[in-house]
Amino acid sequence: MFQSAYLPQKISKKEYHDRLPDLREKLLKVQHLLQTDKSFATIILLAGLDGAGKGSAIARLYEWMDSRYLACNAYQEPPTEEERLRPEMWRYWRDLPARGETAIVFGSWYQPALRASVMGKLSDDGLEHKLASINRFEEMLAHENVLLLKFWFTLPLEKQQVRLTQLKENKRNERHYLQEWSSLKNHRKAEIAGEKAALHTSTGYAPWFVIPSHNSNYRDLALAETIAESMSRKLDQKSARPVAAPAIIANLGSVNAVEAIDLSPVKPKEEYKVELADWQDKLANLIDSKAFKKRSLLCVFQGNDAAGKGGSIRRLTAPLDPRFYKVHPISAPTEEEKLHPYLWRFWRRIPKRGHTTIFDRSYYERVLVERVEGFCSEADWMRAYNEINSFERELADSGIIICKFWLAISEGEQLKRFKEREEVAYKNYKITEEDWRNRLRWADYAIAAGDMVDRTSTRYAPWTLVSSEDKRHARIEVLKATCIALENAMSNVDGLE
Image 1 (tube, rainbow, N blue to C red):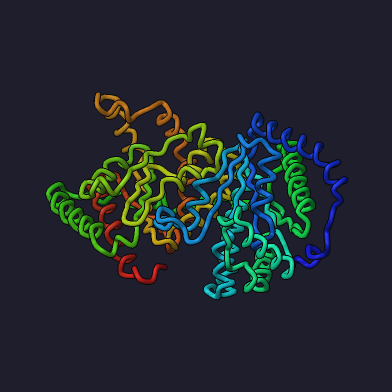
Image 2 (cartoon, helix red, strand yellow):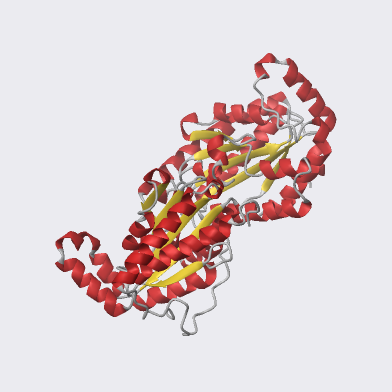
């Protein structure tokens, strides 16, 4: 794929200076239009061999573009302590630009996989697995209005040797970060890994642009012109979206897993008190154990309105140290959150090692409320199943234990609880007009919930379906399932699944 990029590519100084004024004007124009339009975000990803001029190219972009609306996010290896406490992709999600903004990424999500491959720490199969995961991530970005421009800078071995010698001798470049894996001794291995990455991840929604770096003027013009043209086209084609995922098989009217939940179990009060204390003690011991320091816990609560999510969460957190857990009640996204991909706000809230995060409603609202109420397109919620599965797989692979609960009640019990909330003063805040409106679409929500469970209950993040017709029964089931999940996961603490 890179052969043509090694052919000598030059541009005269006159042509360079003749083309530069129009280019700079176009760059500023599209940047300012995007600031007003805010229809998408732009990520400029720079990769390639050491000495190919990535740092110099970034400096040129800062010179030619409006630096007020430009951010440069540089990632090095090894990650910082804060980054090591979270999944590998967390630092990239943390820094995603909002719509209207442009970010330059230097040392991207490709670097850890390429580095490991070149250094012999990742097999070919392992690299392909990583690249497949990257493809899913980048496809999601494209669907979430992110223009991703990926540039690979090439340099022949002899040219790289000259460049790196110059960098070493120039004291101004003493802080230049050498990746080592793509330096002289690993030149060929880095080329092969880079070609494999480009072949596997150059897609219609996130293509690679290979730029020869023999001549700095050619390199910088090619980079900037590609950026200006791509952003301009994206602004002119606001309706252009990546191809939607295949349609979901139509619901044939069969009873789904959510509708089949047995709502009859009841937990007697005295029995409940004993079991509650036992399971809370067990949970406290598991969370305080040495093994849990290597893991973290994510609990997701979904269910019918008035199904008792809050009460179950309070019993779950009662035995925990408040310093090490956080409950996030999830409502409609803020204006800032709407400017980012929908998973962004959840990535920012995932727990670090030794901590617990609880979502009272979650990213599953994309395939529930947003689907039923029409807050997103059919293509958006259809693709969300795979995006959520990939998200949870990344969390699980990083050592996060995921417990997902669907709390179910009958229509009759919900009506009873709604009326109680209206009549009891300290419960008034729990009932809204929206709750009553959602109740009118009970059947639609049941179908959506069934599809959700069918398509997102995985080995690494299974759903626990809980009858909450009797609140005491539901609270014990939640505690019990959480303890069992912790025990099973921590027995495999040295070999994370």
